Amino acid sequence: MKKVKYILIILIFVLGLAGGNYYYNIFLKTNTKFNKDYIFLHIPTSSDQNQLLDSLKNYLTDIPNFIEAAGYKGYLDNIKPGRFKIKNGNNNTEIINSLRSQNIPLKVTFNNIETLNQLFGHISLKIEADNRVFPISNQSQSIIDCLVGTAESLGVRIWTECQVDHIDKQERGFLLGLNNGHEHVADKLVLATGSSRSGYEWARALGHEIINPVPSLFTFKVQDTDLHALSGLALDHAEVYIKGLAKKPLKQSGPVLVTHWGLSGPAIIKLSAWHARELHERDYHVEVVVNTLPGMSDEAVAEAIANYRDQHPLKVVADRPVFEAIPKRLWRYLIKRCDIDESLQWERIRKRDTQKMVDELHRSTHEVCGKGVFKEEFVTAGGVRVDEVDLKTMQSKICPGLHIVGELLNMDGITGGFNFQNAWSSGYLAGNA
Ligand SMILES: Cc1cc2nc3c(=O)[nH]c(=O)nc-3n(C[C@H](O)[C@H](O)[C@H](O)COP(=O)(O)OP(=O)(O)OC[C@H]3O[C@@H](n4cnc5c(N)ncnc54)[C@H](O)[C@@H]3O)c2cc1C
Image (tube, rainbow, N blue to C red; front, top):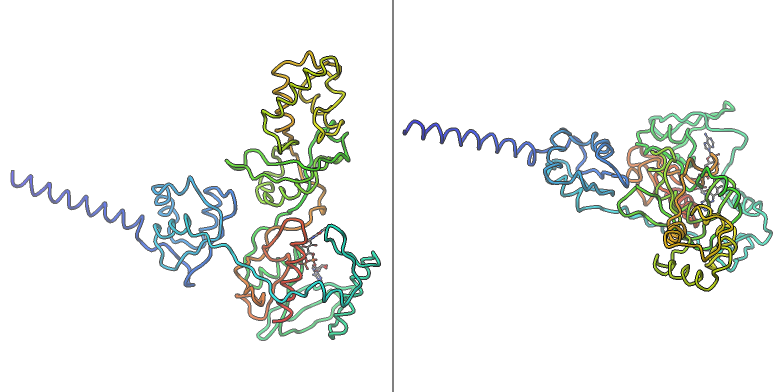
């Protein structure tokens, strides 16, 4: 009896030890493999498990262990996008806690930006009612002359009709080889190559990580000849979102324009920017939903339709839109999508037809089969990791003497001048460093 008791105690002890060891390995053992004190980990919006592991693979020693811990803690079902600080020596529990709750947004503050008044000192400008600024001449040449003139007065030499062919890091500074055979040596180098491929390659060769560049701010191709026939039609205020990308879709609102290839306008272009990466991953094949009457509830739309039917029983449904905000051509198009005959009178409209109309007005769904023509996108998302440059001087933290500015950085904005602001402000900071 005593023997059995001893065996039982030893068994419990061994099991306890094994369990403790397992717990230690999964949750408490250090799981980082970088040398710095800490790193910032970027998890893109709508990342799935594969993308998460792709982001982590360069920083963690034991990925299977991390997956196991994350599974136990329910983190894999709720991956959050953002920028997270992981400290050297963190264990899986600490890493998961950080990924769960310590999103540290990147603070970018641009100081000392020339004010509009100073620009007025260089060029005659006019400000339109909507705050857009134009040179009085209405010629873009005036802006070019201003910039070139200012550069010349500051002693800047500009070489034209040639390209930079290669950049070699030297012991002190950089050697730039031009495609006309000339070479220049520089102490400092500002890479401001926008979204050109050579810029990404040079930045990578100089030690930087490049977040895969993808187009942003573009229009949607929709294969629907009936829709194309509405080309030029504009809705002043619509709401749009992409189906199936997130539990709670990210809605964008504003004007929507119908074109001869699909959908455009500020609301669509903004939507493309917020989903640039997911759209790229889906090869631009998604469903976009348009709400033509965002200010009204389903019930209010159904009631307005029912009232109209009661008041105009003998009128033809397709002839006149019930709602002022809906142009006549669009109304006919939506009625056709409801499978309502174009000669049908209101008195023949049934409840299920009304429901179809509500659905079409509020949730008209279109299959996107591509993006607007290549080169028509306005900006590129992706580029050099922003945390690899010092945001006060735009100097590389990896390659001293190198400054990286503008669209080459993983920084992109929606329409409204934000991309120019990024290019000019970061250029200003680098120029002053
Ligand atoms: C049609 C269109 C409309 C836009 N409208 C707006 C808008 O209204 N508001 C807004 O904020 N943004 C807008 N943008 C985006 C904005 O233009 C860019 O974000 C901004 O110009 C980026 O500035 P950058 O200096 O970083 O790069 P860029 O302006 O692209 O300049 C990069 C320069 O580097 C040069 N270069 C590249 N490789 C080499 C090489 N090997 N040798 C020598 N030179 C090289 C290129 O020729 C180019 O001149 C628009 C873009 C497009 C395409």
